[in-house]
Image 1 (cartoon, rainbow over the protein chains, first blue to last red):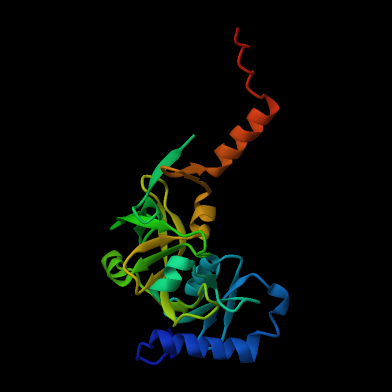
Image 2: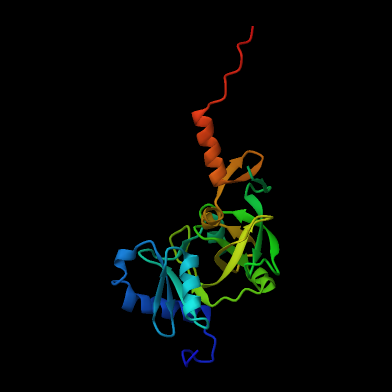
Length: 91
Length: 150
């Protein structure tokens, strides 16, 4: 990968916060017509890789940027996934 | 029709046996008793220990919206493969959570093409296409009524 990343591995919080900031600044308005689809934000270059499913978005993102770090979101939703009762009480 | 039998634990939670692997060949796959959570919109959630055992490589994160409307802290995820025990494994996004158990959500059922039936004494997971075909066939050719008793 050509100088796309620093050597440090970002934490989950760093990936998520950078991804959410990029999405809000760069993509939220542009992708308004893609509601319901999933988007993986490459936190190194700000690219957005869209997929019909979560697996589709992540697979395509990793094919395009094998060493990339991504934050997965669902367009038009607060989060990519909803947690059920059990998971909600485990967090 | 392919039928998988799950079970309901003493707390009333439905479980089914699944297999998860980091690769599509099923190398280094592991078997889990997974809680079926129909409120979970995702594919599969595993513990950190399970993710380590499976050698999952999380290069992405996401968040859940919890049942109370709050957002969870960021959680890592990895692309992996899962299916009912003995079935073909299909690709999906496996989230790695701090809770200790394995959970399957509605995305798992949809991707695997399964229908879920909750019975009083267990859980039945059937192939959805075969199940629908059987229901449609029975609707076209309903079984004959029993003969009248004397």
